[in-house]
Length: 222
View: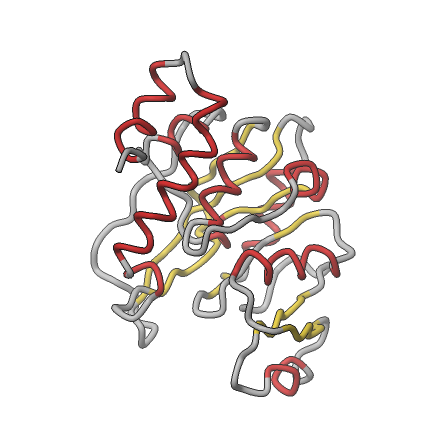
């Protein structure tokens, strides 16, 4: 996490069964608390952070990504708007495993404020979670993160986007996403089953709506 231009924040490091001494590393950084638990997957780790946090808003930063300096300030400014705006998304950059910026472009953010069907149809996807900032009441209302492994973030985004508007802003870039072949998201078979499970959960809410049910019917059947 880079030095932020917004000063009023706390950092919670969830040690999700890591083999490295995460608490010792966290102690070197002001405003950082470490929470230790056995490895139960990313959903449980994020929920542990939610339960321990004291702030009004949340940004979920994965260990292999990098939050850029203007991220929190840009997110707070975006949320200083009507309450129906439940979350905001900023532009991401991408980098290699070694940290070098990649040479290819990143897809533009959606222009609309209602993005449930956009996410459902994979016309665009929030990658990574640190691209977005969420109001606390929004996170609590949808019940935080749920399994399945690999797609708990998609499941969370869909439950939020069904109920709340989003504000998407191209400038400034707020996070840097690390691309590498050993990433857990590269396990294609397991990710596909996770997506299917997420879509099965959405099906009861979209039946009868051809725009919403079409992508689910395409992916879910075995």
